[in-house]
Amino acid sequence: MPEKMAEKEEQGGAGVVVVDPKPSKGFTSKVVDWLEKLIVKLMYDSSQPLHYLSGNFAPVLDETPPCKNLPVIGYLPECLNGEFVRVGSNPKFSPVAGYHWFDGDGMIHGLRIKDGKATYVSRYVRTSRLKQEEYFGGAKFTRFGDLKGLFGLLMVNMQMLRAKLKILDVSYGTGTGNTALVYHHGKLLALSEVDKPYVLKVLEDGDLQTLGLLDYDKRLTHSFTAHPKVDPFTGKSPSLTKKFDHAIVKCLPLAIHIHLLILHTSYLKDGSMHEPVPITISDPIMMHDFAITENYAIFMDLPLYFRPKEMVKEKKLIFTFDATKKARFGVLPRYAKNELHIKWFELPNCFIFHNANAWEEEDEVVLITCRLENPDLELVGRDVKEKLENFANELYEMRFNMKTGIASQRKLSASSVDFPRVNESYTGRKQRYVYGTILDSIAILDSIAKVAGIIKFDLHAEPDTGKSKLEVGGNVQGIFDLGVGRFGSEAVFVPREPGITSEEDDGYLIFFVHDEKTGKSYVNVIDAKTMSPDPVAIVELPNRVPYGFHAFFVTEEQLKEQAKL
Image (tube, rainbow, N blue to C red):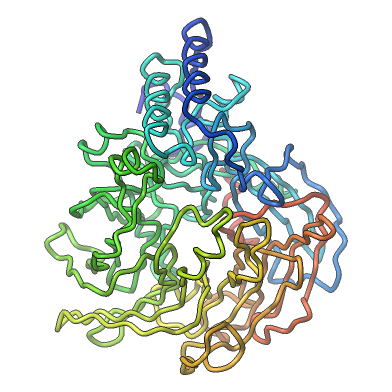
């Protein structure tokens, strides 16, 4: 961390670094811009459609300050007093060449709910990357969508050149803060895998303010996972952080999105960071999530490899899935001092983006997850229907026996399910219900797969293995169909009463919905217990809300706690 960062920490609070990058304009900057334009003109196929900049994936042009007293059909229960927030990709500037959904600047859409009334707001996560591109008035950082072929390698080198010539200031990182949100130790954090967390403050009227980067008093020296876990029973956050092996850094220093040789698990209690435990794996991989139980952390060494050589030779994206390799799962005691205590298990080839939960049963560690076959980060375009025929994202139960070393798995659903959520009062402990989103082939319009519904699973019921599609019956307790031309995003469970003293599914699911026929966006609230087709509440929003990534509900109690920042 540069000294200039330390000097500004007080303004953002303990461990919070106020982001103040120092990019540089001038003749050198113009020369590099000219060189980049020449590379794009000679090597980039501009006829390729940018699907993730069209329809409701397209960014909104402006932020929205708090818009109060929105129309509400139905009622907003008292337990929803707080702020529902969802982050997603919203590029402020047009890309110079390619673009992927992962690439956009993080924008948070929030719904402040209090005493039955609703206020909507949208704000960018004020990252170093965004501030510098605002300074230049255009895109300057390499994008994941550019990382194909020799062109991708050259675009990476353009960013390296800008950093070396101090045109760009990379001392505060290069992340977007566009992936996920979590609340820990009085702070709401916006996350992306290639950066440290950004600290946000929710104001009383629902507005959102970026305070700066969180580095845990300079102890966090590398990037942070997008999916840390907070143990509701201990208050500790076993958070997966990661950094790149030097060989990978030398090969491609701007590797985007979780390609790691070394994983670290560390324990954060009372907002401080304990010593990390390095875990060595053989190849750089993408790992987007992990899981915890009461006593263990579960890591996934899955064969979606970071391979820049194949990117150049075969004109592929920089990640390559190897269908010949086994899936490996490492189970590490949460308070281990080194990696010697990790136990590795193998299961058939797969990939996993998101886990639902994990717990312990006698000698076994149980993982509930969305298991994916044939992952393709380019699931978009003219051949998307063909790709989906080989695409299976299903709910699975995996078991790892800590005494015998044997791993097993069983399928719990048909395809396709993702963004699994549970009542987070049960994180790391045995629970019964899982809520997920349905990715249905019927929803493939404009050549992009979309969320068509919300599904509820009962893990105490036996799955109906004879079904080839998701429908009520067996362990599928309910489905909320969004309707023709209506698509959504991740649903968050909000309990009617906090803790585990009431029924596990006594609460509500809250999520954003967009109607492509009318162009209007909404927040829906449905009864998680009954999964009734009639929403408890529908809040009409003043602006279009693009499809996005992960969501979080900040309780009224948490809002009061973080107000001290």
